[in-house]
Amino acid sequence: MSSFTQPMPVVACGRIPTMGKSISQHLLPEYEVIHFILSYEAAEAELPHLLAGRDPQSRSPNEIGTHDYSRPPRAVIFGRGYDPQQVEELKKKFAGVAKEPVAWVRGNPADLPAGAAGPDYAQNIAAGMKKVVKKWRDEGGKDEEILFESHKHKFKGRYQGYL
Image (spheres, rainbow, N blue to C red):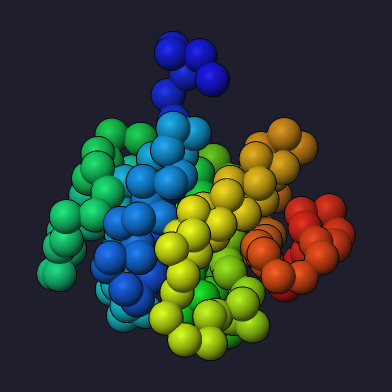
């Protein structure tokens, strides 16, 4: 990656702040988490502002992400704590708000660890998300489909599996 190329801005949605922080760090340098959302309700309130390139005026701010809202996100990445139906509802409500298409990426809930997440969990999740978004970008980044990442299962379909 050239030093002149800026990382692609993304919004991350998750339930566990420590995991979100770790995944955000592992997404660098290609992807910059500009904002981290902790709940479905916060996503409903904040995504329309973020996708329009505005400060979301979060009611529950956190230290995760750069909080640089000068460029709207090109991807919204959901952790496995979000139900597929929630991701679908948010996409239906807010797809088309951004000036450019946005990748809606979710983890596979079947991939939740049975116990405590191991030391490589965040790194593996970030690597999988990077692959999904990179493939979307390489193919033009024009569709607003829900893409999913799965590190336990074989990838299938154009974007390693459609929802």
